Image 1 (tube, rainbow, N blue to C red):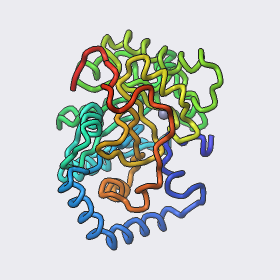
Image 2: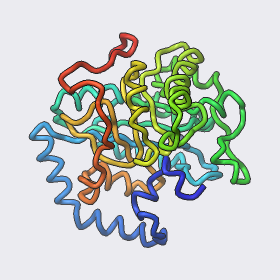
Image 3: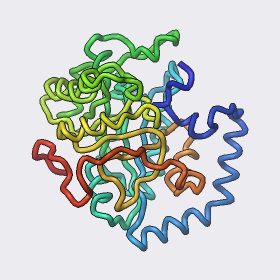
Image 4: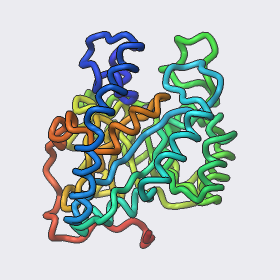
Length: 313
Ligand SMILES: [Zn+2]
């Protein structure tokens, strides 16, 4: 599906479609990080002093040592990511990230971990590790393949497409404290949907169905593919009106205190820890490169956030 997989948008963010050999990217990242290291950590320290430290939201898809689809991070790399992040930053939930953005002040750089789609193997290593280390995680799932017990449509071109989670796994995760979020019924490109009914079904209908299945409120929604062209202003409004707490995109972008607390922008993680280092230490090339998606906020920032079933935290 070529660049349509912007949900796994890291490639598009890095190369804008121009192929870059893996070895050159590997070398370039390390050289650039080494050169810019003093500047970027000084900048982070300054932001923290000013109460303007960023809140970085990362998204993963699948953690497994079987690389049957490209959007897989190995278990060893995932553990290294967590070790590096936990040693330097606060690892927070999306709810806490939102609170700091809305409050307008954040004195310590924070990182929130999310997953998209819902791959069964995540329950073998990644989720147990996050729970064991008490690291908050939001886990966005696409319901259709889970209910139909078949691989995701975007994985069918691979010889061994991985399986999605089961409903039982979602319930177990929810009961264990994982925040389960909604990622539509069909992993549709919402930017191309013209019908309000269809849009409602993918955003609100899927969320309500997910709540029924796991027996808990669903408070967050993530746009499939998540690039600018895959977002839809009406979907923001539908999510707000349905009482969702917030929505996530996937085109990159930092969230700063005082910004939009309803729309959290995310960066895609990949195997190479150096990409995480570059992003989370305030990559200068990314600052200002990903302007927030323009949508008409249903209410001014002076008004309270939408209710979410009375739940806090
Ligand atoms: Zn997705």
